[in-house]
Amino acid sequence: MTARDAWRHGATALAAAGLPEPSREARALVRAASGVDPWLDPGAVLDPAAEVRYHGWLGRRAAREPYAYISGSRPFHRVRIRVRPGVLIPRPETELLVDAADRLAPHGAHVCDLCTGSGAIALALAAARPDLRLDATDISGAALAVAAENAYQLALTERVRLYGGDLWEALPPTQAGRYAVCVCNPPYVEPRELAGLEPEVRDHEPRLALVAERGFGEMYRRIAAGAGRWLCAGGWLVAEVGADQADAVEALWAEHGFSDRFRLRDLDGVERVVGGRWAG
Image (cartoon, rainbow, N blue to C red; front, side):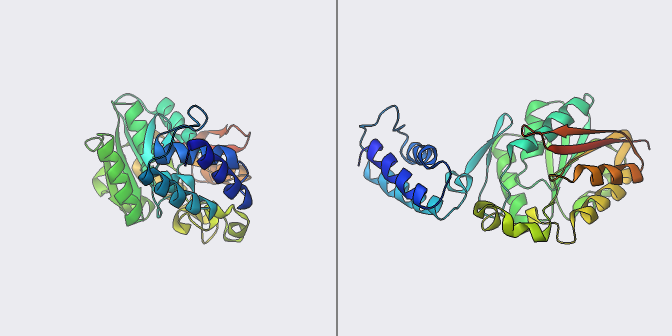
């Protein structure tokens, strides 16, 4: 099978499965499975192993498994993050948290990343700022295993420490009052919203990392209520929020004593990040 034939066959199969950009996705699958770009080298013949791999991956994508799980990684900020089923796939809008922490953290600061998942935020920040030390937490052992793999792959194990547990409870008591910045991308999808998500998200990504089972307000209230113990005076709490949640989350920040509050919009204009300073 030539690369062009594989591309055409894949685009037809993915279009039948209802994917919105079947040609682009089929091209990416051919390239990832064989190392051949069917646009640049359409007459190249796929070797048997690559052809088998391609058809297997094509079937998985037609079943709406996320491409990142199939390829095994996802670019994020300036690093490449490994992902697999059981861990949330990093989104481009989450890069806003990395940029915000980079601006807010003074030289040599200690930073905390709650709900780290694959470790994407903490590791991207550590890669961008060699002066920082980071502690990252998650309640999921599967996610922490992936985060550990990523830290090793990126040679960041000495500056990024991983802890298992629920939000602030995962952190060692010796770290109280030491963080200049805490970033967090918690589960914020309401349970009633899950059915309306794309099948790639709804059927494949971990519910634990997506859904705030008792409502997003309860999740952010716990984060805001616990932050004062862990942030230093003047430290910042910065969190990703869902669409239409920024007003409610900023109100929680104000209720719990955070000043100098701010919001950041993603490329679609959605208010995606809420931050505030802890007076101490």
